[in-house]
Amino acid sequence: MVAEPGRSVSPAATTDDCCATSLPPAGPVTGAAGRGLSTFRVEELDCATEEKELREALGGLAGVRTLSFDLVARRVTVAHDLDSTEPIAQAIRDVGCAHRS
Image (cartoon, rainbow, N blue to C red):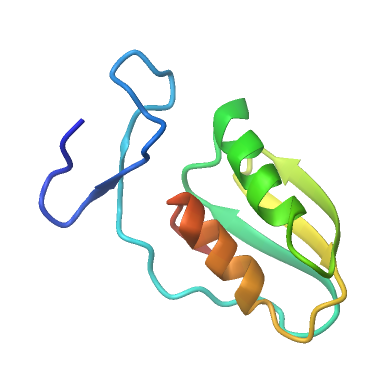
């Protein structure tokens, strides 16, 4: 699958994939800094495929305790022991998703 200029394509997406889509470039991400709960709105989070990819990426981060997904609202809430949410935001970007808090 070839991306249009200025757009990226999820490497797992195919034309037969229910989730195949061109993704906008990841923009700046902000989240509630500090320990506790941080919620991110992830525009592409609309099916089990994206949830699985994000669960694998975020679940492997040191300091992440639990994950909660709301596919309808396109939100992922992360309970963590991190001083900064940047590792979480970077993991979401690494999956190929655009997000904001």
